[in-house]
Image (cartoon, rainbow, N blue to C red):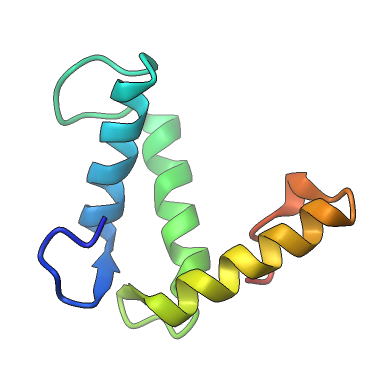
Length: 85
């Protein structure tokens, strides 16, 4: 996902990753656009992952979020996976 090998993911890299993933799953047409709802969800996800609000998601922030998501899923709260990450 870190296409420029900077050591972090910025909002545009996450957006492009979401587009590629959705296209690979047949959920989005080819191109560089997402629906307004998916754009909003992607932006909200990034804002949640970017704990220190510096405009980038570090490996540490990513790992923390996924550890929290795994814990919540194990507790049966998977629909709240990234809350409080």
